[in-house]
Image (cartoon, rainbow, N blue to C red; front, side):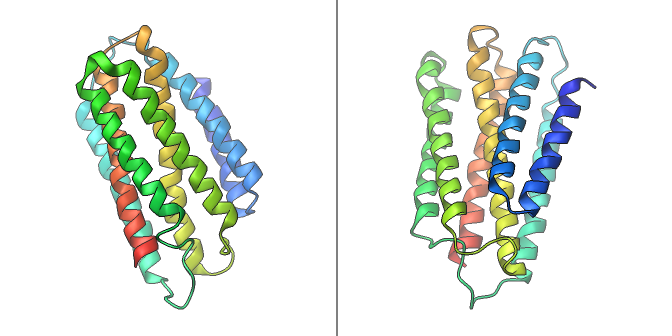
Length: 214
């Protein structure tokens, strides 16, 4: 285990503390530092081109992520209160974010299948992902509900916040393969990162349907 693992653990702890204290400055600063740690980890990993490739382990990881999302969504349904306002109107910022993520999924697919256009489509995917992060930040800061108002709003924030953290991780992975394009052009990492980004996109459609439409 290298120093990046310890660094990521402590930064993640500060992010959780910032979330429970509802101090968005601490929370987003911690996520930014965690983002940089992931980039450092990826930079080290891309040089280990001879390491075994276990695609089945990646799908096992995705399966565990699905169970985590289903657990939080179940708790959201359990505490759902139709008399309370949702985090945002379904035709407001979340609706715009949905189109942005769908667009990023399309550009990620173009990057994945058209190797000659990698330099063009990958930055577009990263840019759209950053736009989604900015929209989510606006939604969190402008929402009338907070984590402490009701159990219902807290459950909603947990579902949306979990997806938000996955978007940040996905962006770190995309930037990592973009930086390493001139150093290492293996298909293994590209496949995993694009699959992960598609997973993030599809999960958002589920989150949008559950939190904002129901």
